[in-house]
Image (cartoon, rainbow, N blue to C red; front, side):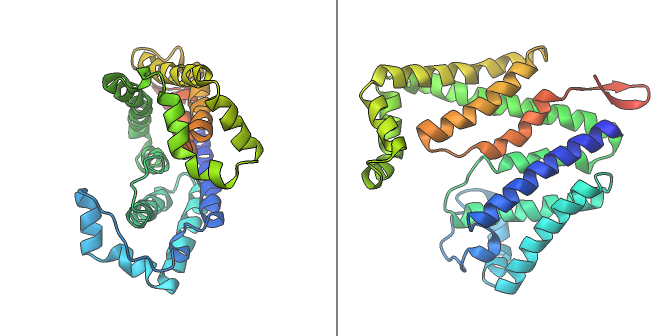
Length: 269
């Protein structure tokens, strides 16, 4: 099926780019330098992995870690080259899920953005007749992510505090402003802090854009606009909150490509 093949290659090309980014940022398993501090929190899955010593075995053995990272790259490439071979995609999913546990455990912070690339691979692990339903489920989960962020701010009333935007910048960029006080970026933050109304307006705009995703639960008519919003929001998160959410962009494919069932199987609209 051409549509599924194209989507699979788009997703795994995106993932491969971020694997290269992980390599560049020294966060692959073989680059973690045998870490000892872990943070499984209260997640039973993390505890099972650590009780089985899987993260410890991989990260404390340079050869094992190198093999693990190599397999992660190889299965990603094979999934791109052979999108119809579900064994490669399933293998990548298992390896990336293990890397997801390792990274979050030793980073001592459970990052949410990496879950996007994990979830985006699931629809391609099933036969064609089930692909449509899982792709749609992933779309609804994408809508939930942004809607949940909107409701979280709304129910806590944090977004309505007049100094909310300024406090976010001061907290998240305190170290940057101290050590890079003369940079262009630092000067832009200083200018914004001198104009708190502008900061608050930008944060309110982002808040309203997150709320727009509620529309997607009732109609797909505005998905193309939600797709654009899903690209703009991570840019704003990075600039104003020092939060890296670009990995979630892989889920935006579910908003830009709509599928439907046909007598011949699954086809694009």
